[in-house]
Amino acid sequence: MSPTSPTTATPAYPGHGHVTFLGAGPGDPGLLTLRAVEALAGADVLIAEPDVLDVVRVHARPGVSTPELTVVDDASKAAVVPVLRDAANLVMEAARGGKRVVRAVTGDPGLDGNAGAEMLACAAEGIAFEVVPGVATAVGVPAYAGVPLRDSEGTDVRFVDARTASDRCWTEVGASDGTVVVSTTLDAVAAAAGELVAAGRKPDTPLTVTVAGTTTRQRTWTATLGTIAQVFKQGKVLPSPDGHQPVIAVVGERSSAAQRDQLSWFESKPLFGWRVLVPRTKEQAASLSDQLRSYGAVPHEVPTIAVEPPRTPQQMERAVKGLVTGRYEWIAFTSVNAVKAVREKFEEYGLDARAFAGIKVAAVGEQTAAALVDFGVKPDLVPSGEQSAAGLLEDWPPYDSVFDPIDRVFLPRADIATETLVAGLIELGWEVDDVTAYRTVRASPPPADTREAIKGGGFDAVLFTSSSTVRNLVGIAGKPHNVTVIACIGPATAKTAEEHGLRVDVLSPEPSVHKLAEALADFGIRRREAALEAGDPVTRPSERRPGARRRRTT
Image 1 (spheres, rainbow, N blue to C red):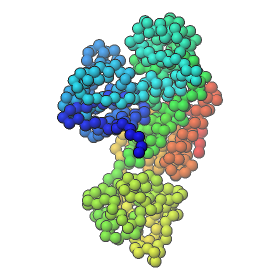
Image 2: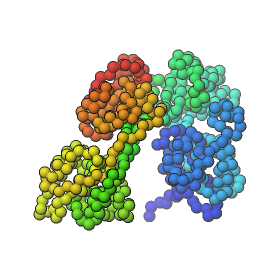
Image 3: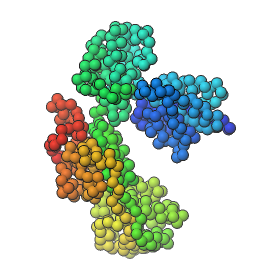
């Protein structure tokens, strides 16, 4: 018998509320724990710090209540610092009403003084609560900055909040030769450095300062206690209206520049901080955006195509009924939207994936196959080579009157799809019911700020996955600025881009959106290496001088 382990499910207390104090980490949504995600899914009420609300809300169920935290006094509002809150009142009110409450804080609740006070309030009223630890900001941010806090010799580590540190605290850490992790704000870093020097730390002690840690806005400066003020001044970091931003400063030998050059894994990602425009439909953009995020990019999805039902639905209705009555041997899906169209018809008629029993199913590529699996259908045929109509035909078996009892294929597709697949199937001996399952129309223009960013060079790159995305994006939003890196999925798309006056920088080696994203990442790596080799700062394309030439790469 295996050893037992404690349950992690939120306990049920009939007639009573329950509070989960949850650490949301420093900012990267991927740092939420599995237990945190589980607790969020069961919450009736979600009370979250403004900085992490978007991080945790995506894991809560639809309809969860998210009361807004309010400012207690005008002084805290004017200071532009983490505000005083009435969270305790909101937590207690919801818990008294028998609700399951999740109270989410930045970092870890054990290091949040307000959360500690709220726990005591729950205990005083006999309200059951639990604590879900999170990645502490003072630990997670240095890790993402490539700054180890300890070495093999067991360096002492001290954590200091500069906003509440006493003279005694500064004296103690100043007398130490260990690593000091200081939580402060950008415009108060120099003052904290001065406190440490006055308390005995040497002015040449290495220092790193990281703002927006663990997010794609992260930036780290390396200096010493004695030079940090000058580094900020020369780099025009300060003075700045953003000086109130929280930062983590690490003081000690572990934060030296030589080590950060080797250990800065996050900020050295190939597309770190790049704003990449993904002009596709929402359904198609999701997996591509996830891949871009893994390279450090910030994808911005702009639908260029809207999907609408066919003008005359009768043909589609007859075909779906034919699936149930055994009219077809095969059904071939050439897009995610085709899967969606058939699925919606099934739901309209009260059908589910079981209606595909006895029918062979083909998918043009991996994304379409994934949409079918999500529907509960495992495709019988996916191209082993090129993911296209031509690739599907390469693997499609010819009709055999002995082994195939039915000779008909149902092909639900877009109104503007090419005839390649139909002609190829007929040549293989099949009869094809070529049915318009949906119409593609040009989407509405994106918001004004997005259009301005496209035309004004606010995006670092744009990925074009078809000729129609080129035409539609230019039509609804204007032509991308010439500092923007243009990446195309194939020669035909590149030709269309060039016809619209765009210079193509990246060409995918294969007609695959994922290979296209890889090619853009490779471009980013080569660009970064060239800057470092030349002794230039690593910048994003949108930070370059307008009109600078770029070489095309494949």
